[in-house]
Image 1 (tube, rainbow, N blue to C red):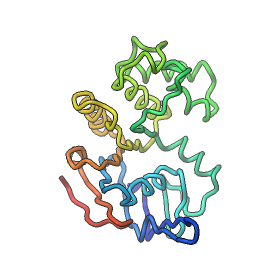
Image 2 (image 1 turned 30 degrees about the vertical axis):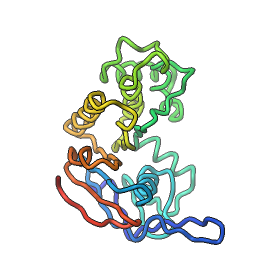
Image 3 (image 1 turned 120 degrees about the horizontal axis):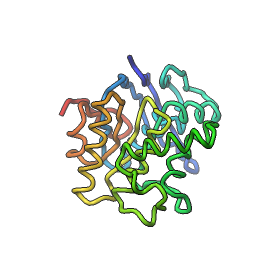
Image 4 (image 1 turned 120 degrees about the vertical axis):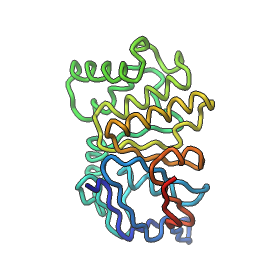
Length: 226
C-alpha cells in the first residue's frame, strides 16, 4: 500500500523578482514498510522534498497524497493534524528543548495530540526504555551525549506510533561509531515494520536503505537499489 504518492509535483519560491523552481515534476511512491533514502548535493531540492513529504508545506502544483490524505492544497491546520498523527521526525540538530528532561521532550507530540498527562508520561517512559534511555528519564539534554540526545529524538518521533519516520541527516552531528549505532536503530525499526525515509548527502548512509532516490536540480535523476 502506498503511504506517499506524489504526481507531477512542483514547488517554486519567489526571491525578489526571481522565481526559483526547487522541485520540477516529481513523481514518487513510497510503500508501507519501505526503507528509502533521498540523496543529492546541497541545493538539489532534497530538503524541499522532505518538507513536502513531512507535511511541512504544500506543492505549488501537482498532487500530493500522504497516508490517504490529499494534501495538495491543504491548510496549515490540516497539514499539522496529519503530521502529528502520521509522521515522526528525527533531525540532525536533535531539536530538543533544553529546559525539559528526557520524558518531557518525548511527550511533546502527545501534548499537541491532546493526550492526558498520565497517559503521556506512561507512553514516553515506555518508548524511552525501548531506545535504551530507561536510566536517563530525568536528565536534561545538556546532561546527555550526542548519541543519547539522538535517541531522545528517535523516541519522540516514535511516541505517537507514526506510520512514517523521517530522518534528516540524523547522524550529521555524531561521531562515526555513534552514527552507526543510530543508523542500526533505523534499520531495526524498519525490520519491525516501520516505514523509514532518510535524507542524506552521504552515499554510504544511503546504501543502508533498500531503495535510493537521487535528486538533482529539483528532479529525480535516478532510482536504484543499493
